[in-house]
Image 1 (tube, rainbow, N blue to C red):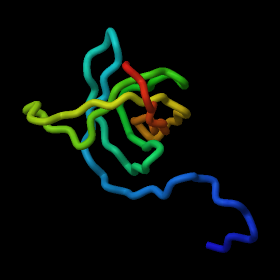
Image 2 (image 1 turned 90 degrees about the horizontal axis):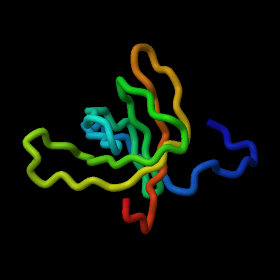
Image 3 (image 1 turned 180 degrees about the horizontal axis):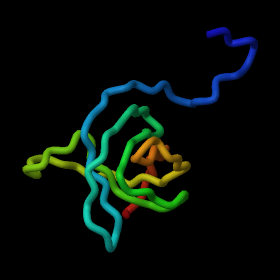
Image 4 (image 1 turned 30 degrees about the horizontal axis):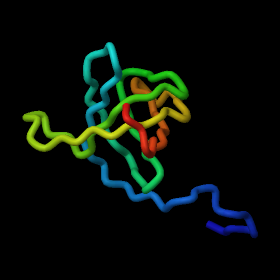
Length: 99
């Protein structure tokens, strides 16, 4: 694709690992999701549940259902869109949070 002199939109390059993830939100049951891509600054994931823009959650990637070694980190939802029967979310990592 031609750049046509435009500045890159993203601060960090993304990679597409297609990993399972687990989303946790205070007061809700954990939700299994699929991470589509991830970068140093954030990620994009597909979920059966829509999350509100600017809500703060925790995510573990990769996620192991047996709980062995899952590490949850805080994220903030930046955008949400319908994707067939699922919802596509863009999220930023929250640095220095004590979520």
